[in-house]
Length: 429
Image 1: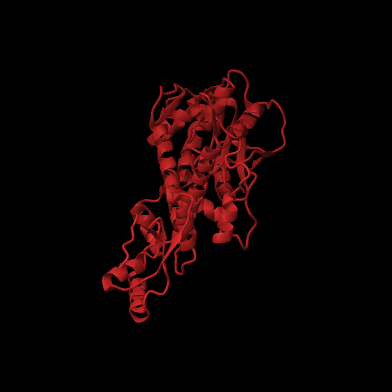
Image 2: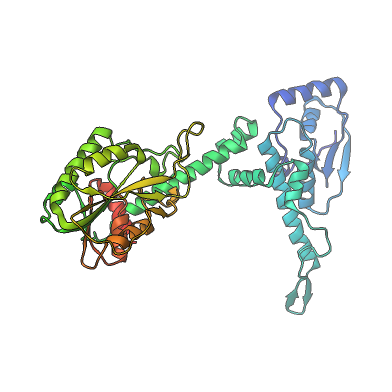
């Protein structure tokens, strides 16, 4: 029997047969012999490893067909292309074979570059093109021809091949999971890692701003002098137990939830806050309370006990939120209840519809964060030099950030200690 060489590197390119496939091949060769020749290159097997194993096992005769390849890379490329014709290969295994072909094409290009390089004395010059007049290889075209994959699927495969652990790759080879499933899981884990890193970075405290306080807003408001507040600009809990259903990621900031956002506790808190503010607000002052249309009537009933409600302001966020997709209009607004104590004059008379795009979830540091630009538009109407602005429910710190940008004296209060640290970093970034 002719002895052939086996190169482990080349053999590793061959997707292994399943136990059932090997048993069927064994049955066939015992019944019919080894009909197809074993393909070799320089005496080394490039196709037929399983047939050669059975030939040795049962002392069966076989034929050999010697191939001529210009290099190892040409041999590997041929092997990968030949294996793509096998049945029952999983999508991931096909992708791995395509990856081998891509690598070989790249390395063959380098080989041709070296062949076409010329030496002149101690100077080494090379043609501008790596493969000169050789036909250029379009990877996307190869994938389309060999697999029928879209470029998007090829991109997903590349991510999975690079980032999936080996045990997951083995499941992919067996067909237990799909490329898309693993890709989505990788992106989910990356998103989670990014969010955790962002939160961790925000936990790193810098010097705490003097104009923000971590604690109970009722207690801190009570500590202020009566009549000292000129403007209240705040976004209190709405009493709707807010947690976004829009984001696909469980770790996104909009899934975080809010303190005191149960219906009864939120309305009770608003009532107590307004009672204190009625004493702490200046004789001529402006107050702005963000709210949802769903609780507008309740907010209006509470706030109107202490202040005169004027024209409500509508914030157009630019895109619709989630909700009843089949039996309702898409809501893309929030309401700002504008009210006064006494008669503080406006600086300019704006229309009550304000268009400012909502902040994208990936850029938010708080579940209900308001754009700084929007808050500055409200301050533009009410703020005069020397005014004292207070936000009893600071959240992200956007109000304080807006005040800082116009050099306004201000105070922000936040009960949530973790959120307070995040806001502090946001304000001072």
